[in-house]
Image (tube, rainbow, N blue to C red):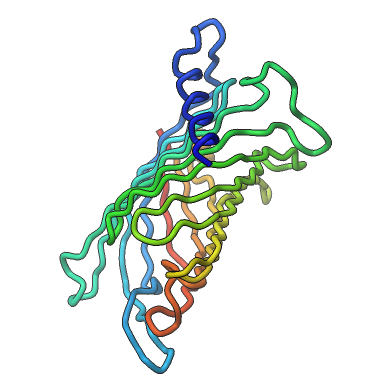
Amino acid sequence: MKALRKTLIAGCVAAALAPAAHAEKFFSTSSISILHSNQYQGVEFDAGGNGGRDYEATYFTFENATAHNWGSTFFFIDRDQPHDDDLEGTDEVYGEFAPNISGSWLTGQDLSFGPIKDVMLSGQYEFGGGTEVNNYMTGFGLAWDVPTFLYFNTMFYYVNNSEIADDQQLTVTWGVPFNVGPALFLVDGYMDWSTSASDHKSELQITPQIKLDVGNFWDAPGVLYAGIEYQYWNNKYGLDETLIDEQSSVSALVKFHF
């Protein structure tokens, strides 16, 4: 795994030092989102197996995504603001940075085959949150050619966790647009599944968003979205039912791209 991490770091360095004539940026987009729900699940101990509690909060999220001929990057950082009186002052900041290096670009060979568009070296850094994690993830990814989808990717990681035992994670990301008459919609999101270890349970998190392109009605498509986010989270934080229940939450969502 150390060798894979060194290869990923070398790929990132090579991409950063690529001559301008050979490095091409396809797009870069940033956004700010506001989400609100009273169905988030927090930690509360119950020896009988009915742990956890619902709480209300607002999340403020900044995201940036880029695509290049050498690969892609994705970064987000969010701050949650609980509204329950007993949770006042417990705001948390959490973020992730995920670079992917195109195997085709790195090797100079076309690695596509069948429905696979490319094979990627993938990494991710997770930081912050309630336990101030510093997790380093290394692995590989597959970019899939799925009809009608803007993107469909699968990543397989080994996770070097700072606060709990190391584990493995599968991540799936997707984005697909559709329209109903003149209304444009985007359904995107991710799924994370991680393995169990000696000190935590296996987690499953599925988080799709369905958003209406509001800006399209003002001749400014892709700028302002409104919709909902659904989040299903089993064994949240790797904890069992004595500490937390399954989260099944619906959040109101507004997202502005710039």
